[in-house]
Length: 105
Length: 177
Image (tube, rainbow over all chains, first blue to last red; front, side, top):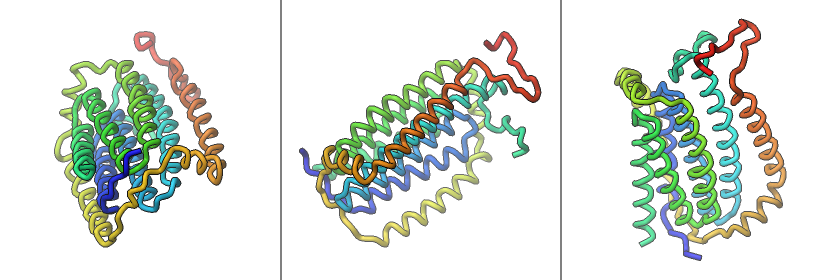
């Protein structure tokens, strides 16, 4: 087993923060539903990275357990999200999320 | 040497993620996203989490991204989609959110730079993760299985050919099927 690197903890957390903000920006700025779902995946992945970094900082396995739970959530979320994309495409004829405004949002 | 690997993988991860959310074509964005996830897997391995690295490749870059590829293939967007994206992604649309996000990022950076702690540098074996997972966290495993079941039922329901709107009697026309 290779020895793990010894980087400052804040560098790992900074990377997770940068990735999360990129994903947040994608959710807010894009109108294409597929890109919004991809940005959600980026945000969940950034959360997982933060858990791994924290687990590595404390030398505990809990971080990886939380990462696996996030992975499960991401899988369940993407299944429902992509199913909704297919239905929305059939109904609205577009991937523009602003067209789905029947609730007055 | 491993330090260089870490920062290189971090740079690749950041760059490809930025590329992924700024592409016009969904399939191009998807390829960049896969590269970003692979870079994350390398980072996980370097941080001493080999099991998480394998899961990242098998489930994220494998299963979830393949799901995206299937949906993009089913939607069959074609060249027309690029022009629409050009129209949708005008600067007036993204400058406001970008400024707000960068402000938030500045706060995060400022807070994180207050702390000083290095990682332990000890690798955590899959065995330790498994013992933890089926020891204190066994309830979380059960909840995850319920969540996956809910996802399965939801995916089956939403993935059907069409859903008839019971209230308005909405039915998709034949050309769409």
